[in-house]
Length: 354
Image 1 (cartoon, one colour):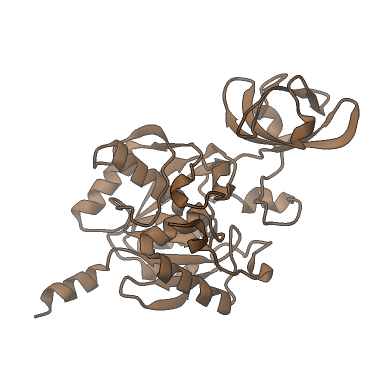
Image 2: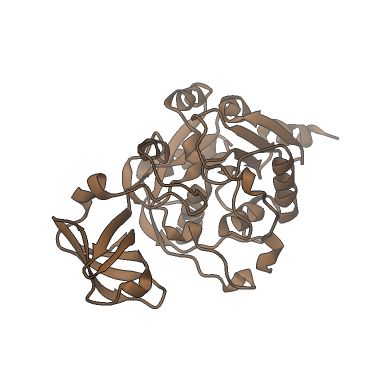
């Protein structure tokens, strides 16, 4: 398929620049039978079914954006930490890249200096800090807001660009479908007979990486680390045993579970791993039945994943409807609930039909 097959026109006014209060966003529901319904995220306890399993990504966003100075140059240098490679070594993006040649020293404050060791072919830089950078991040780091949010980060973003259940530090972008949940909404969901499990996928910069190839088959995903505990794998087994559906909160959970089942030879097994899985139309889903997700960028890998899950034409038609109805797009925007596997009631009705 071609990348342009996933393009659509999005007015700039549709891109959310600020987050709505948790639990108050709109929700476009796409039933398996083809009906579209307009609801609220707060309706999830009634939209999901007793016996379903809701799977969350508990990664925690680190304040991975840093600013410093290079000796002999008056401008500001921006670092975006991407992946920890050692006690003091990180892969990072550096701006302006032309000012970050090997040997360049970037002073972040009087206690912390980053040295550029290597500039990689993919545009990343290998940095070595004068001491471990993690203890300095809360003081010096900024929230790595996506590039389509055209404002500096604020103290409020420290809390809002983080799920209420974030636990495991390591992401440079939030699993944004999870930003809608409050503790009370999760309690309501559990009280409705819906089990909740947690996995971890540390979201990397690949979530913002544009697809520049003409053919989507030529695009390569960035590697991301994931971990699935024994409690989550047991919860999946229980859900399958009771004919419950697996409900993924966000594309990161989809990528985690579908990567794990491929690695496990058809079974989701506990353990840690990494994935470069690229889910496009034609992909055979083995685990996820229902997807809660935000609205994604034109031509993005995330839009391709959602199109694989529900059908490209149907998703693009739903996006057109969402734009007409004033839904808010991207990380701080509204959400969709997309069903791939029919509800239990629908399955029973079709079985009983003559």
